[in-house]
Image (cartoon, rainbow, N blue to C red; front, top):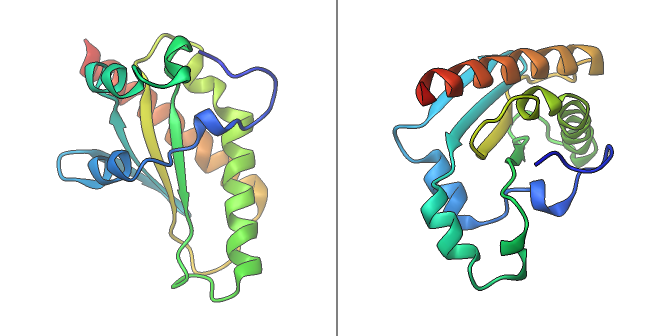
Length: 144
């Protein structure tokens, strides 16, 4: 399901503590394209349907959800961390169609900032495209 317009809705945010723990548990895949690293996992459809059976959101199709992490170790000031997170969100918002243009199973993605210095937005967007293409290729290989 492609989100309407160019928004970043709450349904695309990975908030569940349980889902985050399973994302970072062993056996999941990861790629790096400096200054970003992506950790991803294909969502378990049966568990998702059971978890959403009691919620009102069960009527909507499952979507890819993302988590954005910028460590205090890399940026001591909150202003810098927030800017990096804004850059990642914007890059995702503009390039998420890469994952939605072909039918893929719903994914959980975590984008982690690796650089100790601020990066230009153009570089962040270029690296996001690179990572999304690589994730798409790997998920297609796994599903074949």
